[in-house]
Length: 113
Length: 109
Image 1 (cartoon, rainbow over the protein chains, first blue to last red):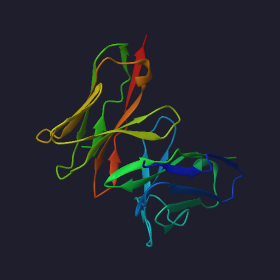
Image 2: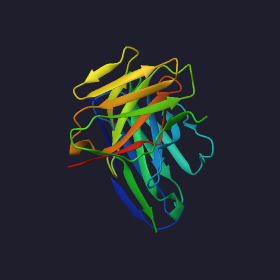
Image 3: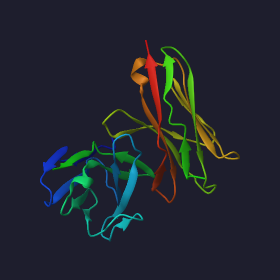
């Protein structure tokens, strides 16, 4: 149980394009999902908390207009990286919470050329 | 003091060794504690929750020391497959977690 999927698993795109990443909880409902970013050899950094039916809560320093989050249902949250630039290249990982525990998706590797 | 601190390691141990990691946290109001394992270029996977009374799962034992505000993870009889980065996580809200930077473990033959 507690399986989280993420799609796509990797993306290569040109600078200036927008990239949408989906996070789904497959066997449970998650009122709260989280989006993290991890640069090579760095720790997980929480970007935002996504709540079903309401606006996401962004961590300090994360631009909400740059990283658009939508949590339209209890099993789906999406992160859109708008006008991606090379410095946005990173490993983006979502997690979904149930019973106070977070379970992670497999992550999306984004490379912006 | 950082919210969650871990010794980054790496801890180099031979197969069969016992190894322990500690993780300190600053928020005395924290109620939930976890150990995650992260393999290279993969997502973190929940290893175990840490309960006040301590808990054991096979070769893994986790303990919580509220007075000194740290959690520990003990791995007995290390296997090559235990090589990974071990992340501790502490809650700051119902399900929001703050992660440590991780401790790298390398188990050698």
